Length: 304
Length: 64
Image (tube, rainbow over the protein chains, first blue to last red):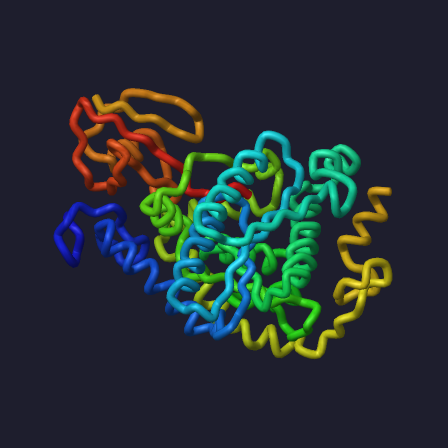
């Protein structure tokens, strides 16, 4: 079956509608959907300085590519890239090179913040010190901490990530299983519950696109999509949820869209429920937190 | 028989199949989480394969 619109050779069958699209029709479909997401959820405004969190992987580089293209059209938007080097030997080194190369070629300011420099230990060293802790949980805490701290330092008004529909459906289900509505309230295409100048709002322009669609876009744009998975990925709760959802998606197509779309219906209720949540300054580092000590400092204490 | 390279497993094998859909079925691959290329061009499940074809199956999951 050729492309539905121009009868050329198809590159993808869309997950829900089963429509076949060729290279240019798919690219148009993808970019239109991202633009619609940005508009629908007011993700980017005029004169925003968007710092894009990059890992060098296909999702974040595609996101950076798209937003940079948008910035070139709308001159008032400024784009920078920020990479967090967790210190995972044999993994991050390669993607870092890809990210830096891309930024250089496209004249995008590129910044790096590393676990080693900021917290004194690499993730590899942390996992040895805390063998009973799931690496992804620790990594996530420090990554979010540094992304917020550094994007604020860079005077960003938004922090963009390459999260897609697959990532979001996993997070929604994980929070449901753990009965963590406070965390659910922070999800969505524009994260956070309460605006606070210490928190840079995070945006997810690929929110309504699947991982397969994002990979297809990345491939068509010439990004390296060769398989390169984090060595710690196999021991996380998310990994199990991801497999569960992928199996359900195969058996019941539209599962992930269903989870995300129904979540978007109830998200305003979650945000309303937590809108009066207090935001304090961490006693140790002065970074914003809902507790007295932020999770990053709590973990640092455990590491000492 | 088409030659199939599985990128994640770093394995190449011959699979008796006339379409990509058959390859997925025979290798028990979930098509919703992979993309497939033939001569460095993306193909879809209904694409017909000839015995001399060499295809690559790449997982789409993020690095983590």
